[in-house]
Image (cartoon, rainbow, N blue to C red):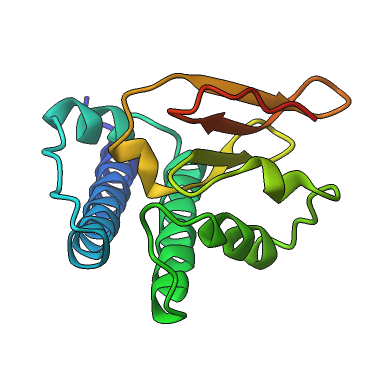
Length: 165
């Protein structure tokens, strides 16, 4: 016997997942357009497995990812509108930290140079920002940990300097 209630719930859940995938695709499209227009970085094709894996996440996690990508794109867009280059400029790190309401230790930004790779993580270990050097950079990464040994930022540099806090 068919349980119509379960069938309707399942259909509704898959509709929500499909709507989330459509929203995620649009976020990726906007991010790619910004990168191509402002940083001259050609979009990379997204494998179909990414969309399938995304659809398999919980609705809360899907929406959190969408919001995170929207927020990230908004930071980059705001920086670009303020005349900050999205590639090769350390001012982007300061701009992002300011928008994220983060205050680095004294002298911290002196350790970051133009062209360095830079990421910021929240207390839960989720990435909340990275500069676009990531897409250009073939080097190595140095994690930056807080007093509880959680990764709070990751740096990369062709200059091979190590950054610790």
